[in-house]
Image (cartoon, rainbow over the protein chains, first blue to last red):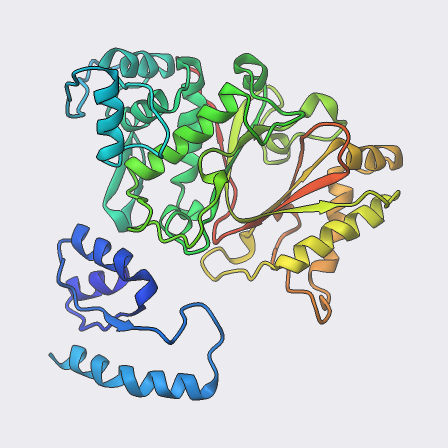
Length: 75
Length: 333
């Protein structure tokens, strides 16, 4: 989480993908780093955070996340 | 000690109840009552260590945290320490804030890793650190309050608040306090701190962040090899994945109780002999139900003698993305 913020500080466009389960931690990190509105890309349930995903689940997640990442990097 | 004033903000309270309730309401405690960190008490702790309040103990860069001696003293008072425990608390804080002790990860992790504090050397008898029966549990002021002091520093200074930067799914009762000593006098083995390069008459604190506190209970084995195989099975059941950040320096800890120690003693096995037996097996195929034990160096397997008679048991401490760090307990000049 902090890595993404520090890369942004260095002028490198960054998309940080995190799971809903750690969203509170990410928001706290963004706040204490002086970027409270840092736009994390959130993966939500039903994708569980700590597990081996099947290939189909990974494909579905990628389809869901890729536009958000693209939008983040080109904003 | 430099005559630097305390930097902490002062608060006034109507009475003891107001103080305790305010600490709970503001999230400044771990859910238990605290000892009021009055300026006089904090200064007495700093004097016991011979440190000025602004001495830097370490940092957590990702959280923009700098931990000073004053921070540690305030939380050590709150935890119920005595002033003469404070040099041990300082060593524990320094060890935990070492880069490879990885405070940010080990106190934020979903796994709820715990900070294990192991004390070696003469300071154990000087301040009453329990090393024998019941040493990992309640009943011993030094153990309880030193471990709690480190955890309060982690919470109140290093920002590891449950539900915020501390994302543990379950957390652990060991996060209230987890401190014990090596029972050096009850064993023929070389104490851990001596194996790690310190003198036998030096006192040290080793802090290891641990994801799993597991137990190898073995009532039936009667040979060193068979006991080692029980410990190996526990290590393989949990697995140690290893990590690019830690490389070959990954550590794990075996806390061997006296009922198991006896069989090693009878056979003349040293700690090094245990490592010589176990280490080659770490690189063997762990079998269909086992996992890799990713310890890259023989000395990465730390061995501690502790606990009391009766239970044929060894505790196996599985690391969480951190290596064990040993710091000297520094007596005031």
